[in-house]
Image 1 (spheres, helix red, strand yellow):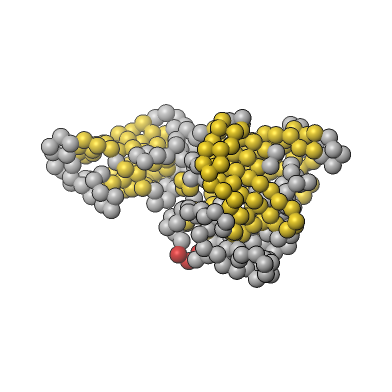
Image 2: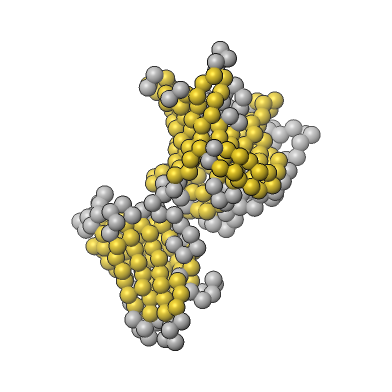
Length: 363
């Protein structure tokens, strides 16, 4: 339960309310006969899950943080300063057989921490949908944990994963975010995708707005707004005031591997002196591919692995190439600032890189 806005929003609602899927599937017993059906566990078997991703309405990059603030009335009608710090952590958790990324939400009232939730998310590589596999919740009073209301995990007591953020939203579509009967049954509907919204962090156009409800409290509603490339910028009284970018931010030519710590880029040159940079494709959180000339033709695969708990006591860089042109692979540890370059000479088959002492920068 989100204690900050409990008077105005259904139990279990999170800042990461999703936009809707482009298809629907009935979940018996949770939707009214007069409403469109809601999505529930759609085609999970068709997904290859990863713990990072660039869904436009829910960036899932370790270190990415949104700070939202506002005012809300308490039970006595007094105004309370509220805030929510939502951070994509460099942590993962295995839930229901899927390795998920931890998104932490820290909520405060008048400067006092009242709730910490660890949300377990994974991205379907084939669709870009962000799946929600559960959350661990700590309710806090006077600095002490007093409860865990709203805690659920897919695969436990009949709970199923929901969809928080599809890759292709559709106006008017409805879907389940949380599918934990009797505990968390949040659902959402897309209202628009072309609004202009002004918050302390700035003015955002083509904003996606949603109306969230809960099957446990269907008479209550919670409006949210999501900006493309940013994430949630408004949740009832909460408004975005600051975006904190990670030390490595992925883009079309940059990988951020090993939970976002290592920045990886590639430069290339052909025998006729044509030059370019590698285009990044992310297979997983630890490995990335680059293509040079054609998106369907991978030229280079790079891994950065954590060997800190081995006798090597270092981070490893492994790479394999399918090219014989000149290539410069650059890997930077954003925590220490150390950089390593690996060069492949012109007209030479790319030799595998197996550097088990690349970065002695543990932990």
